[in-house]
Structure formats: structure tokens, C-alpha cells
Length: 86
Image 1: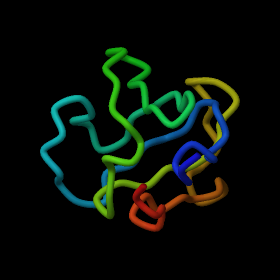
Image 2: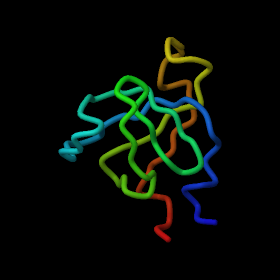
Image 3: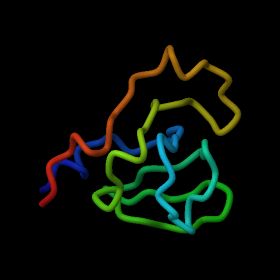
Image 4: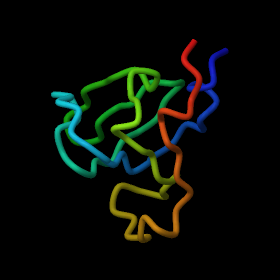
């Protein structure tokens, strides 16, 4: 099992720290579902392996639902470049 798959399944905010030109996740902030190490864009249903994200993105959460209005500053942050690559 790799470290990316250890992130709990659920809904998160995926936030762009800097441009990464990822066509599946073009917005600055996107609600995503993490499912067994795979990031699923909640709006478009496009998928990307969590391990493919790096310092350009961070996860905040988990959140209770796609409309959760908890400020990002109050949510736990996971810097995706801190996850060891398998």
C-alpha cells in the first residue's frame, strides 16, 4: 500500500497553489472525492491518481458534503508533494 492510498476516502477541497495545466482539474478550488487513492472531480467525474499531484496542489478536509462552507483555514491541509511516491 502506498501513502497516497492512506488518505481517508471522502470529500475534500483540492486547491491549486500554482498552475499545473491539469485538464481534469482546471479550477483554483475543486470539490473532489478521494476513493482508494484516486481523485475524482465531483463536477466532471474525471479521475486522476492522487500520486500524480505534486506541490502545485493541496487537499483540505475532509468535508461533510459538496456544499460545506467551512473556511479552508479551519480544515486540515495535506500538501500533496509531501506524500512519498511509490
